[in-house]
Length: 301
Ligand code: 5GP
Image (cartoon, rainbow, N blue to C red; front, side, top):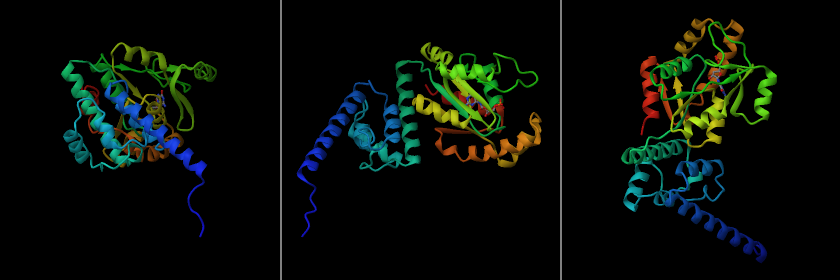
């Protein structure tokens, strides 16, 4: 009969790897316990690489490593989140991951409120074209001057009434290339297959360091890049009340010719499908209401 056991040498290597993984997991748990590692960062790392030490950590062990979390609270949390105690963080489904992130956010907000800490945070507002991101962001700029609304750089031409340095930094292709080369952009993307848009890194980092919250009004690709670069960012999806309403808003705006409108509607279909990747969804029925909801999410302190 064939011997199915792996050769001795392989078994030794496998057990060495298992020991290393256990050690790495133990290090992660003590970093969480000591507050040196943001649990949201661990979740992002785990989901990004399920085979890593973070990914192979059981959700129960993860929860039990959070400060002030005992067995009873952990069991209760697993129950509420609909996650089995056997589940590993890297093996969470998309819905479970969203729920776990929201749970961690809420915990952090409660802790900050208890300690009277004002949390600065990076919030990304994304959503399909013409949904009214710009209007909602503008409303927040006027009514909440404590929040920094990041001004993007773009290679597109200014529209009538747009002001350089306020609406965008309008730059040439060569200047945009230079900004990328010099690492000045936190993220950038070619939007609607036409022009490039990017978020200048320094004002964002300076504002966060000074304890201010920052709002980025960017496209979906940008939102994904920010999530990778800054896992603690809160991603908010601004959704239209309906598809017909979205089409109406895009055609009414009248700033794009029919070809450009068609191109933007095609992008919008793809963008709408990404709603599930976001931490929160805000429906833009009324600008003031939607803006308030975004500010409330920002302010969940
Ligand atoms: P518009 O040309 O209508 O001003 O903007 C087109 C799209 O570019 C919008 O969806 C807007 O959210 C996106 N956008 C604006 N600034 C940035 C940015 O800095 N980065 C990315 N990735 N997208 C941006």
